[in-house]
Image 1 (cartoon, helix red, strand yellow):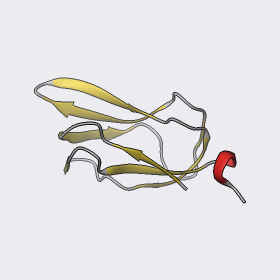
Image 2 (cartoon, helix red, strand yellow; image 1 turned 30 degrees about the horizontal axis):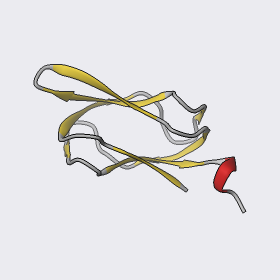
Image 3 (cartoon, helix red, strand yellow; image 1 turned 60 degrees about the horizontal axis):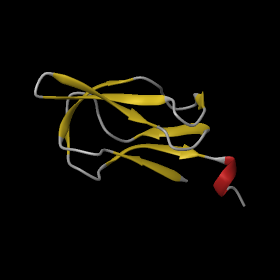
Image 4 (cartoon, one colour; image 1 turned 180 degrees about the horizontal axis):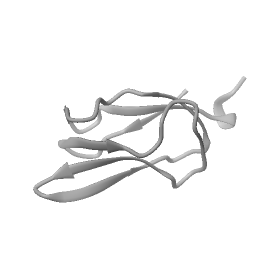
Length: 76
């Protein structure tokens, strides 16, 4: 399981993908908002989104998990 993490303290504005969606590396999984700026959160690997951990409308801290991705890179 690969963890997509927030790079800064911000509000979770919206989920761009949802559990079950297939994504590729570089896709935006969520949009954060801080100081009236939109900050995209990118997937570093492709795979299937298993869970959106960060809840829309809440605040994430730097390093908090935003989403979980099941990737072929870490399948055993």
